[in-house]
Image (tube, rainbow, N blue to C red; front, side, top):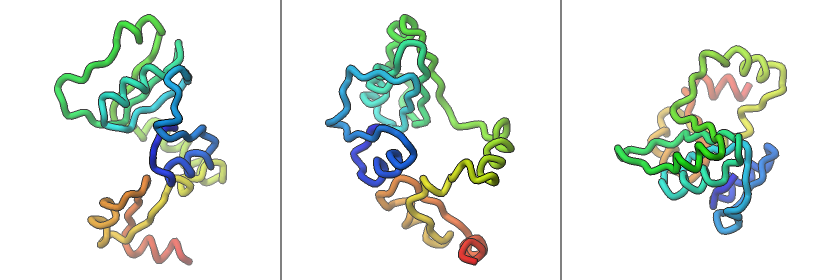
Length: 144
């Protein structure tokens, strides 16, 4: 995981990821699973480059330009699978919820800020990796 945000790196490392600052990332390193969440074309291209032969690169970022250059020839030669778009939760939601209920998955570990619904407009502007907003009723039940 590459991010200059210290809190994001801390969370990623606590989940078992190798967490690096951008200046620590060696462009020669290769990984079988890579994820681009940057929204910046140079970072997308570096993420694709860091994907190992036979690996999968997923982009969850939104690119608003009609033309985003990606190295298709190099990807073809390395047999890289590229996936983009929003997650489709319905096919796997029951399995994920089951893992959470069994205590094997802890989604709260990636949450760095829980804000009440009425403060959502402020919370989303904060520089923190994962903000969750909740209605008052949820916050009260979560405390009890």
